[in-house]
Amino acid sequence: MKLRTTAAASATGLALLTVLALSGCGVSQQTAAAGGTSTPASVCSGSSDDTAADPTQLTLALVPSGDASKLVETVKPLEDALTQRLGIPVKGVITQDYQAAVEAIGSNQAQIGMLPSLQMSQACDKYGAVPALQTQRNGKSTYAAQFFTNDPDKYCSDKPVAGANGMLYCNGTEKGTGPAGLDSITKIKGATVSLLQAASPAGYIFPVAAMKKAGLDVDKDIKTVQVTANDASVLAVYNGDAEVGTSYWDARSVVAKDTPDVGQKVVVFALTDEIPNDGVSITGKISAKWQTKIADAMKDYAGTEEGVKALTAIYQITGLVDADPSSLKKTQEAAASIGLG
Image (tube, rainbow, N blue to C red; front, side, top):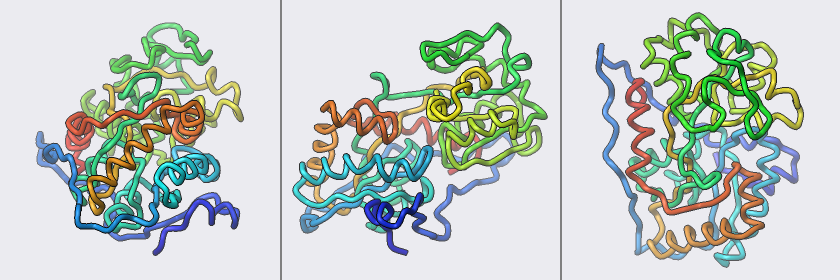
C-alpha cells in the first residue's frame, strides 16, 4: 500500500493517512520466564550506501501525537523548508502508528522519520537507519512520562500546587523532571488506566515499567482503556472514562484550548525516570553525504525563529541536536524489562 502525502490529505480533507497495513509491524511481546527479561540489542549507529544514486525526492514519515488533521497542516512549513534547503521535493506522510513509520523507512517508502526513541533504535537495528538527531524541549533531550488522575485525594500525599503553566501537580511533579511521586503508584491497583499502544515510550513502556517495579501486574491489577494518542489519554481521565492516565509531560497543554479547566480537573501525581527524547532517523539506503545534508538542513531550520515555531507546532520541539545512540538504549532496556522487544 503506497504512502500518501500530506498534500493529498489536504486536497481530499482526510484527517489521517492510514498507511502500511503490514503484517507483523507491531512491537512484539515476549513471555519472559519468571524473573527474566528479554535482552535489548547493542548500540546501533546505522549504515549508509555510498553507491546509491542521489535522491530526486524525499518522504518524511510522522506519527500523530494528537489530532492527525492538525499535523497534516502543521508539517507544511517543514516540507517547504527542507525542499528549499535540499533542492529536491520533500513531502510528509502521516503513518497510522509508530511501527508503520519504522516499516516505511525499512521499505524505502520514507527516507526520513520523526520517531520516538525506541523506534529510532528499532529502525537502526532492523534496517540500518541512522539515528541522526534528537529533539530538545526547553533545552532538554530527555523528558518524563506522567501519571495523572481525576481523583487527587487518592493519589496525592500533599495539596496539589499550580505549576508555571497554571495546572495542578502534586507529589513533587511540578518541575517535570523524573522520577517523582512513584511511591503513589501502588494506589493504582484496581483502577481503570488509559494507556497508549505498547510502542509508546511515555504512554506505555516507561509507565508500565514503573508499575511493574512497584509490584503491579498490568494484566491483572488494573483495567486498561487503550487510547491512540497522548491527548486522548488526558481526555479519557478528564471525561471520567479512566481514573488514571499516562502520557508525556505535560500533554494536558495540548487539550487546554478546548478544555480550559483540564489542568484543575486532571492532576499529575507521578513521573517516571527520564526518557530519551524522540528524534530524526534517516534511511541507510542513501549515501553518507546525503544523510549529513538532511541532518544539517533540519538542524539549520531548527535554529531559525520560523523553524522553532513550525517544529513546536508539530511536536513541541524547540531544537534539534546530534543524537546519542547510546542514550536511546535506555528505552530498549525499559521495553525489555516488561517483555517487549
